[in-house]
Image (tube, rainbow, N blue to C red; front, side):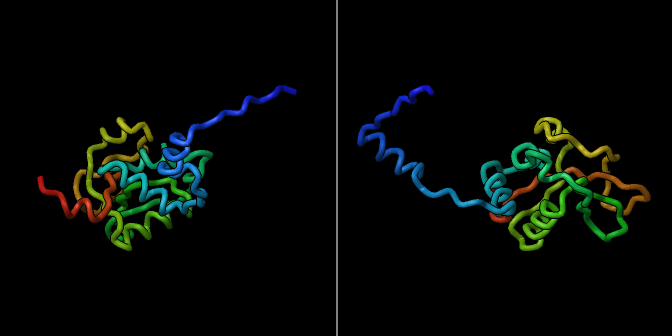
Length: 148
């Protein structure tokens, strides 16, 4: 059995740790809360980035597909979503907390979260075959307050 050395802290260090919240009880966060926090930290978040940060262990993988427009338009903003992930994203968008904005597919290459193996939707109209519309996600407040 090895003896573990105990670390001693100064009062100043303990005060700093307390201010940083290191002694606060960590409450489990919902997937919706985790998505909001991730988007809040980056003004423009892709589904690929969400998968990279929150998708450990296949938590976000499934068979659901999130489409836009009429149900027969065959335009999807993300595919292979778990039911929990689909529900969380649908609620965030429908509640007006998150806004999806068209984006370049290059963002998905940069984020490293992969891209759906679908043709890219070039126009907003129904397609005969499934197409992918690359989007980034923003908090609704941040997209309204842009002054550029």
